[in-house]
Length: 387
Figure 1: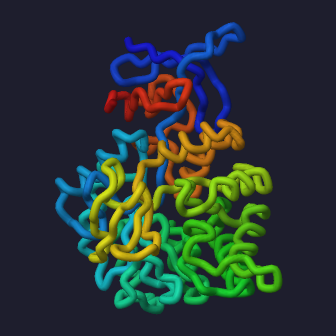
Figure 2: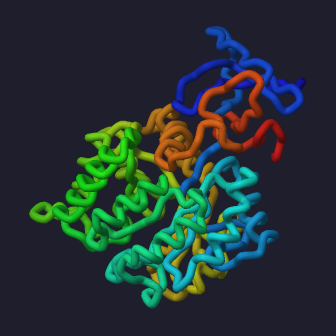
């Protein structure tokens, strides 16, 4: 029997106890909360990242080698992300990578696969290869979804490129459109949101059927006369139509704005992602994303030789630490934005390996132990200590 002591939060940010007891890899007991319990460590469920391109020096879009794929996953698991998607980018042919990732979904190492492109805007391509960007080909999309065996959970698409038929195809394969890398108008964004809701109702889908890929980044900014897609995505979130991801690493969006979003919208439909590249778990240096050269300078990723941001350079725990220490967002909301909301947005099952939303006696829990200043002390995944 191993006892982990500290204030215990579930995946919704609710305090549910003051410690956990794990026996033989299974949860034996949640130690009840006490009013007189000392303020010591903090226990939260393992983090969930549904937009991640790699880590540990390995890029998912740039390898099909199982040893390398495992290395990237392990880098995030040891960093506190116990469940994650593997994200690809715009590619001429992503089928080899999709087929290489499916076994890791089947064995529980990955929660799913995310395709970021290629049906995006060339004008808002960010750090993606323009030669691979193209309009939607339904037969091609069907081939990818079939190869993905329902593990492709989200696909980033520009709203101006989508059709109702494409949305229906995605949702019928339990895959959510994720609106992003777009140069669309507000009208086009609203139409995509509304059409997805219509198709979801027709298919009997009651869950939130769509997401937004890294709000603000790779899309037109808000203008006071032309508010554009950002306003529509935020409005959709307030209506419960869409879950919105933000890269809260302090580089992609100013921390003040992240905090403003939580004050204005609350935590129900906002969640954090890393958009991490191979650099996650390492540091400054030179890396590759989808065949493009990128570099990390002072903790931020750029296309080599430019000031164009090209993804994240850290594990999700860094975002938890940044905003917990700033203190403007309630810690409960930070937990929700890194556990239960991304889990729901990704459409993952509650019993998936690495996922703990509620602590259930007899199940293999995944959780983190943090110090009072939010340093990562221990990582437990599926009942086994990784750190």
